[in-house]
Length: 342
Image 1 (cartoon, helix red, strand yellow):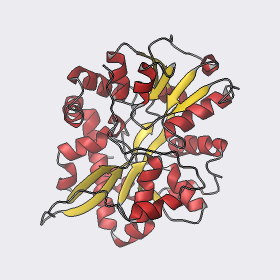
Image 2 (cartoon, helix red, strand yellow; image 1 turned 90 degrees about the horizontal axis):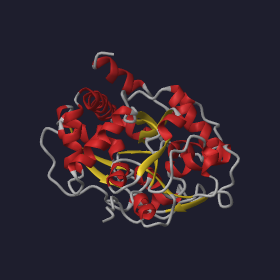
Image 3 (tube, helix red, strand yellow; image 1 turned 120 degrees about the vertical axis):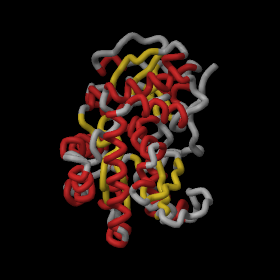
Image 4 (cartoon, helix red, strand yellow; image 1 turned 90 degrees about the vertical axis):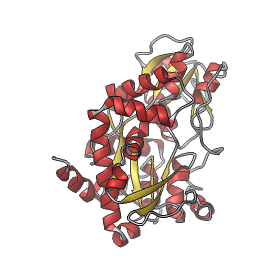
């Protein structure tokens, strides 16, 4: 039986041209569920792009009470994609979002707001999985294949497209890309619609449990990479620096706990994905930590950002006219790191 892992809304491809327009529509949508505000906690509306184990640091922080320990009550919702997540921040229905931080670069280059205050995923958390292919060691071996990813401009599409074009392959001619809703990639591959799915955990471990195998490792191919950033509006940072610091500090503490206590991370992951077999989820976390995909520290490193921007400039999604210091505010992350012991 094919396990469908998406917990998101239906996602339609959103072009760069239409990206900022999405904010107005999503601004009217309340993404956080109802609930009474705890007297001693500050309530924060928080959006994740998709619900997946690349964001294990977030879930560890929630289950370990780390956010509450720093005075925050997170109302977490999944937006259905990177564009939708940041559009929720732009539209005012979320205070923070995690997703592809390229969205902030797009916004700023178009004259809009946005800033990145930390990283959650420090490497490309995608793997090529297939039931029929052998291990691929050279991207040129993708020639003649149909691969399935999330829709453009989601990160796994962007990473795949650049890799193929760098290898001299033409998308649509040499290689076909089938775009599906985030979280449903393996279903399309297992159904025979594609030779390979480019997916994240726990989809990858689920596919392996159903007879597929990992044939390509994007985390090693790409190297350091700001796959997922914490995005917020500068106006919110100015008005609520204490909340920003509390959130970033919580992510720093959660990142460290994830690596220091992998058994707890697995326990959390099993609770977040209760419909999946425990051994599948455990294998997913083992792979996440082995390849050092979740951020080990919330600080955004220049080489992580440079690799992301190089890819996005190559693809034409951004112009690259904004510098690292214009987009990244590491001041909160650096304080959090120092408080945690450096």
